[in-house]
Amino acid sequence: MVKFPKLPKKGNKELGSLRSEIENTALKDGTSINISIPINGFIEIANGIWRSKKSLSLLTSGKNIEDLSMVFRHIESSIDVLNQLGIQIHDHTGEIIPESGSVSIKIITFQPSKGLTREEIIETVKPSIYYKESRIQKGEVIVGVPE
Image 1 (cartoon, rainbow, N blue to C red):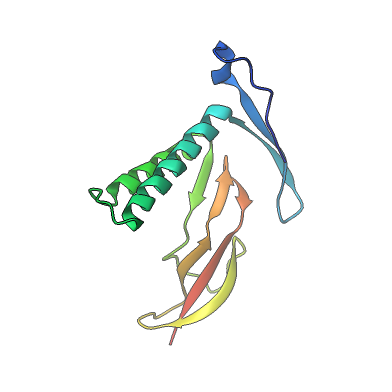
Image 2: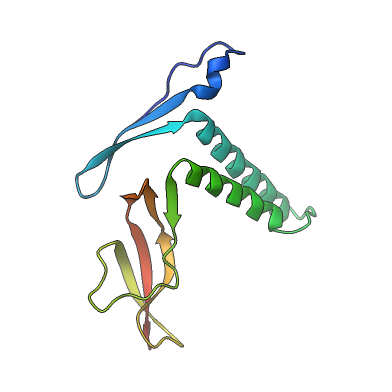
């Protein structure tokens, strides 16, 4: 549940210091953590996502924009804000699965793939997400296996 504080009247200097609380973020293993994130962080992330969506819509509508570097820049900016807030996103694509397996990810399926000599993650469906080094989302992956 996300609990947002009441916003002060427009022009209030405290607006920049507002904090939102994400309470009792339940993890699949039954534990929970409390996360406190500045509201300005959410605003910057929302702006970056909106800019990315706007840039992608220009591409799909046939209008000319220089290239995808604009979209990439907006996404990178949003990821930088998340990192500053203590949230890290980990993409597992390309990682090798140890022979003992892995408890830090959920394997959705195994897929025979040409060119592989060992089991390797060929697609991250959901990244692992960490808040201040505590995992808050377990990654979900597709593992390629040699044909």
